[in-house]
Image (cartoon, rainbow, N blue to C red; front, side, top):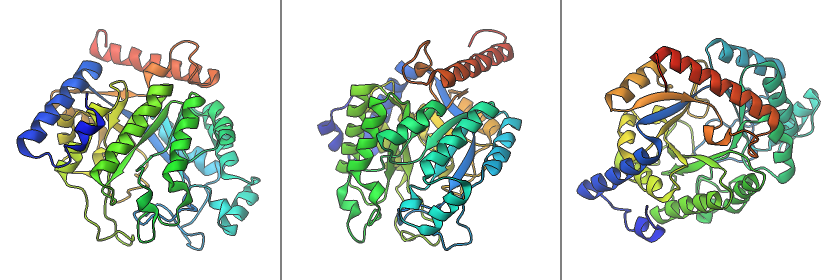
Length: 379
């Protein structure tokens, strides 16, 4: 394990230093997670692509005046959910812009037409429908949430998530990627982490690296996440996501983080974070993603056989069978997981609503039974 001070000194680790750091990270990963690397088979539902934030690295968000701006109907949600069920998905990921109705009249009117005055209330009903009418478990990625909003969503969500991204207030200044983005305030995002912990929500968070943050700011963000988990035990996974240039964004010409930068950040994250926090990196955002296994990751995240990555639409998901073979060639085994990790599925768990818990436990048992039958023994 690394202290924050030790981690700060590794910002320029190269060559042998980086190789040694990665070896330490892999050793720690294997102590807790063994030779297994997991993924969640998901279907992706972008409930709305309108947002009151205007981050300069984002292509997902559409201004309400754009013909592409929309709020999905419940019928559209269910059509996507059924496609997910047909391809053996277990997770339905709701991803959406943050509170567009608070900034744009068009978004407010679109919600009103559906019979709602807030996106969170609409999301809660969409989650309830998916939970009750399909075999899928909802995972909610709705950004910053108040206590009341978490309470609305908790009965119908297996887990929730929000990328911390960074703790840098500097990146909110004019000319920086989070300028005029109220929901990207580090204070607000850390408060959401705190609220999720207090309310015992299995939670996913992480860093977006390469948007202008310093190495010291990355370490500060990892420390903040770890401290929250130490207090509440609710951080089930941390994602290290690399910034990607996209045509038409404000940061179109901004340099992307190098592979070494990703490997160094992943290894340090593994050595700073509590070992029971899953460490994830997206496999579709780098052609050399298999090298991440040498930096201590134990999870590839959600992968969809049905829907595109709406956040990074130019990057295809890997084919799961091919990812399994590549992972095996790297000396590890790919295994499917649920949107909520097994450690939160104990009987009478305080972390999952009873209805969601019962459904999650049933799915987990089915998955393990199927895996046992396929291998002819225990898993």
